[in-house]
Length: 500
Image (cartoon, rainbow, N blue to C red; front, side, top):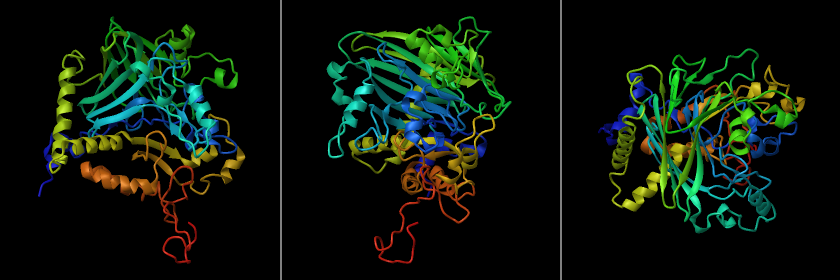
């Protein structure tokens, strides 16, 4: 009997790869947190949380991935879209979610933000999330201090406990993505002022490329530049050495394009005296007014469209962005002529898909709960890259790692070389796959995307994952620590197996 899911428009997109049209190529594959992960840890003692904290994330280039707020990217992170916000009060741009490290939180690592994954489809033809952004300065230091002072028996000190949302002085920032076609991305940002007074909000949609050039001498780099053929300055051109077609990124509105390089700020981190601009150049320009922090040539490997909004109490404002190939059937048309119609169409496709999924669920509240839970699963599909051999030995264009790491964490997993879209246990707290969790994820994914569920289970048995001794990789903190482990006398009562 045919599955009603595949009779929907979205269901047919799920199978479109067989026809050469890959609707899965773009998705919410950008991590919520790349800092504080093992794969970015090059410290002598393997102290991942301490060696790469949140404070360095805006200034230090990542080796193995990227992160961002409300991110959307292709399946190799060659091009990444994300959102930066500034309320005029914060000490830094809000480019990524903040949280406590394992040592700072009284119950371990813990994200300290309010955000909600609200909707989505399996091919990510439509996705929506909500971020609540305070209008007062974000209480970074207080969140750390309050939780550090509490014990394990105490409740956690949360963002709402700071009083920062009093009188509804915050913005509801809704971010929606839709695909006009498999390779044509629409981004809609709607900011609602929930407070009693008018308030300023800087909205900066960002486009950048994962740093693939700082690790090998002579490696080619991508380029983003203002389109010289457009006098209105509304669009930029993005070319990548690994991609045949240049992409066009356009914003609808009065925006100033800012450019920098997705490279480590060696001046801030290491006391060097090198010319920029660096990864944190846009942050330094917007927040601190540092005009020399961005490229005067208006080119680089990271850019942002800077829009200054002033939103009335109870009012809202929208920002529209489109990222599409420079050549193709729609290349010469107005980028926003049918933007809203396309967005409405993808919302309708999403509704039709879940009507098929939930055809046997009469309770509307239960359908809503399930749909948002599935949205959380879909937003947690992320790009994961790690070549353990390269991680252990180091890169040719970088300082050699500490000698001790060749006998430390994961030293016996040199064969592991991951470069895939994988379902994560959590997009911030656990931004790495876990074999035990992944198996359960696939049970849920089979409900809406059996193709993806099957591919995930097969992934762990590939030679790039599975150990030569037949063991499946557990998680990056200890790939050999597969769960559930058989502990003699604690599970089935036998004594013939070791603790691994």
